[in-house]
Length: 188
Image (cartoon, rainbow, N blue to C red):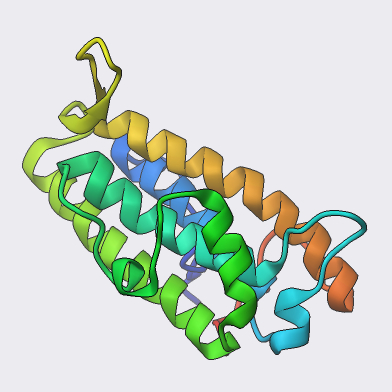
């Protein structure tokens, strides 16, 4: 009898709430990475119509959002990774506009590194406090967001931008599809 192995982006069929939320985020991460993978500078800077969005800009933006969510928003610590050395100013425009100056391998490394750091930070937060723990970030009246809220917000962020990536990638070379092929792994 052959054992069926699900691809790494497949969320659990019947897990805990945390496992489902993390699985949903990872599915979005894998799908986004598939849409952005294997492109040269021309592919990562390609635009559609009047939009300024590019796959390179989305890679850099989502990398910064990964670090921002599970560092600044979760703990209140300053943003880590390469961001401060690069001149990150906290605005979304910076990531999108500065990505055009980055080599493809640098953009992929930013995203891959940020996701790796985020996975470790999220796993530790779930282990030590669970989804109900309050994060550093909140509203001006003092109410704090839960880790659950941060996780849902990042899933929403990926959902929005993975849709953008679908259109951009199809315009670059015709790549389409909801999930990567079963045996796909990043090449860049």
